[in-house]
Structures are given as structure tokens and as C-alpha cells.
Image (cartoon, rainbow, N blue to C red; front, side, top):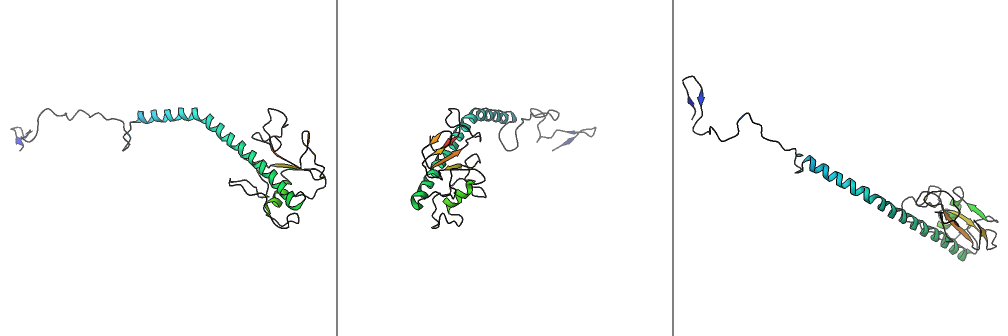
Length: 204
């Protein structure tokens, strides 16, 4: 119960303690914790800094692994194109082109060869509509025209021995019926005979 003194002031009742607790004027210390997270702000910032350092250390290694995977993909594609053209010749006895001289097929003309190999359009060159070149599982392997693209978005260039003399001139005489080239990560044509070249070709 509360007791009233002569001056009308209330004294502390028996159910309340007059001492030993925190005084009303003293603020309880507050720790800076994010609501419901259980981490202090300093702890969270420390974790973020550690993650950033680890990411900086791992990024070059991850990038190198990805680049190697792209190069291996391009090498596989180059061989698949060569095998598809050779299979076409075995089936029909001629190359999938109408030219009569050795011809370089670039981004403006290579699709005519790839569409024949994939049997995506009607062609007298592939009357039985046999699929010699399968579509890779990776996204963006072919553009809207039918050009086969390397991992860096450039067309796989072709040169065919359309005069059937068994020789193709590409940075030297090549005794083969088809040359397939990817310009590699730098997307620039280099001399594949040079050690610093990053071109990917089917005769290396």
C-alpha cells in the first residue's frame, strides 16, 4: 500500500523497493544489434570484408578455369564441324557447297554451309535431309541466320577445297579438304603458326 505523508507526498509502499535497482535517471546500455539477426554491426562488417578478400583471391583462378573451358569447347566444336563435313562427303561424294574454287566462308556466308549440314532448310545438296551437325546444348550456339558461333560469339570460319585438288592455302599449304577456324578469345585473326596466336584451328 502507498502511504501519504503530511505534505501530501506518497512514500514508497511495502511492495516496492526503495533501493538496489536502477535509478530512473540512468539509461540502460544498448548494444548495436540488427533486429532479429543476432549479429552486431561490427561483426557483420567483418564478415563482409572477409568475403570480399576471399572473392578477390579466388576470382583470377575462377576466371582462368572458365577461359580454359571455353577454349576446350571451341576445340571440340572445330573438330565436330570437320567431322560433319567429312561425313557429308562420305555420304554424297561432294562438299556441301556449290563453288568450284577454294572459298573462305565468313559470317556472311558460312550459314549456307551450316544450314546444309544441319538440314534446317531445303537444299539440293542434302536431298535426304540428313543431320550431320548436331546442335550443341549450350545457349547461343547458332545465330538467327544459322551461323555456328564460338564461345566468344564469333562465327566458326570455314575454307573448303571446292576445286578438289586436296590442297587448301591458309597460312601455308594444307593438304586437307576443310579448314575450320575460331579466332579465339581475342576475336582477331592471327597466324596459327605463331606461338602467341590464340586462334583455334582443326589442323593443330
